[in-house]
Length: 169
Image (cartoon, rainbow, N blue to C red; front, side, top):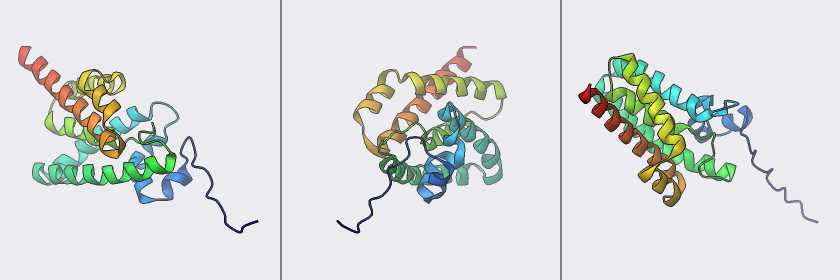
């Protein structure tokens, strides 16, 4: 017999203890929004929306977008660490991709609440259904980069559709 202790298996559903056990988990689980008992992606999206509402005016556009790019890079690292720990690269509790995507959408759609609310609903629909290029990336680009990329593509499509809708009205 050996004195080697095997690590305990990763939780299927992350807990508060798991989230606080590593900075990457804290980030990738959206500061706790990924622990929501239902629809964690929606809670992460809400976090991104409210964070951008608060941070962009506080920091100004240039600093906000630089910070968002930095948060994207940190998010790729964090999602990778957490995905490995959970045994699933795109675990439903990893919501940093939704946080970043919605923060970007919100920052690029300043002003009217209704525009952002429509964008929120459209982004969630695209993120859940994964049509066209979003689904292709989700199926073919693996790892943490893929986790982030499919949501950025959903954000770009959301912005395009909302811009077209605003233009046609």
